[in-house]
Image (tube, rainbow, N blue to C red):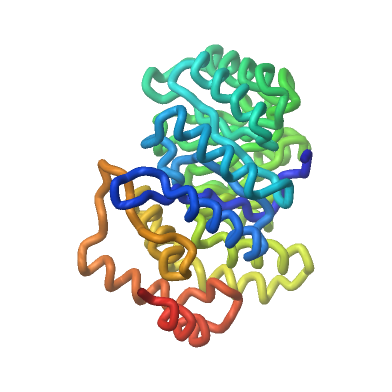
Length: 314
C-alpha cells in the first residue's frame, strides 16, 4: 500500500501482560478499535508505544502485528531510529520487509551529532528502505534541534524525506516556515500529543500523531475541518485539549492515560507499563477520572460520554 500520510495517525500503545510480556491479542484489538474509530493511519513502535523499552526482536514483532492486522486499510508508520546509523539502517530494512508504508525517524540522541552527521544519518536510512521518511523533531526529548534549513537540505538530497513531526513547543512558527520554505513539498504533522493540531491546521499542517486514546476525537477534528465544518471541529478540539495537556506532563503519564482509557473501553486487558515507569498517585487518578469523563472521545456530548465511560469502567 502506498497511501498518502494525512490526518490523525495515533501512536499505538504496546499492551503488556502482568509479567511485562507483550499482549498480542490486545494489540490486535487496539488496531481494530482505532481503525474502526476512523483514524487515518497508525504508528508504532514510537515513544508513546514504549518502543524504547522493547528489544529489537520485540520491536519487529509489534510492527509486524500492526501491519498484518491493519491489512492495508490504513497506512502504518514504523519507527526505525537508533543511536547509531547502522542500527537505524538495519531497522529500516526490516520495517520495509515486513510491509511498513513509511518510516518515522528520530535523530541519534546519546552522542549529539553535528549537522553533517545528521544529513548522512537520514540520507542512509532513506536509501536503505526506499520508503517515505517522517523526520521526528523532538528537541525537548533528544536534546537535538533540527533547523528548517537542515530539513530543506534533507528533502533536496532525498525526496523520500517528505514529512516532519514537530514535537517542540510552540510549533506554530516552525510549521509555517517549513511549509513556506519548502513550498509544501514537506508535510508537517503536529506532535506532542496533538496540542498544536488546531493551530497547525490553520497554518496548513497535514495531520497529527497523538496518543492512542485521542485518535478517535482528533480524527473527527481533521475530518470536520476538511469538510469546512470548522465550528464543530473546534468544539471537539476544545473538549479534548484539557485532557491532552494534562496527560502530556510526562511520557509515562501519557502512556498510562492511553492504556487506562483503552482498558476501560474493553480494548486492552491491562494498563501495565514496562519499568522503569512513574505511575500516577491517587490525586492524579482522581484528576484523570474528571478529565476522561469530560472528553467526548466518541463525538458525543460531554454528558453522553461521561455516561458512556461510567458504563464501561472496570
